[in-house]
Length: 94
Image (cartoon, rainbow, N blue to C red; front, side):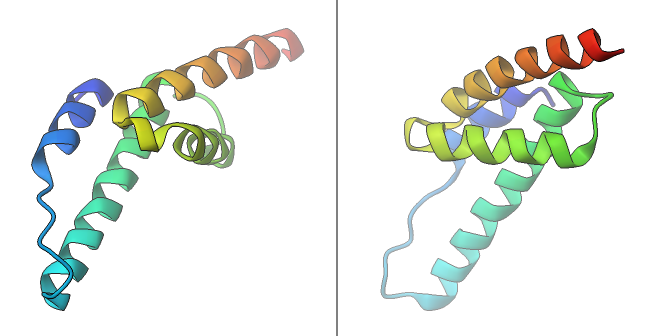
């Protein structure tokens, strides 16, 4: 699955259960964490397949911090922008 396909699915799939059902809220939060982890891994594979996992994680954390309030598509846009810069720098050092 491509990152943009995950973004589409994630934006549509989650339904907020309401604060009174603790078990449903825990499952809702876990689903969000699982989607985020999968999205991070897919972005890394798509945009930085040959770079260190630590670098990809840092880039994802920055993209998530700056863009998640606007949705998964925005996170992907920011990730791609940063990944492009990293690739140029890394290629220049090789």
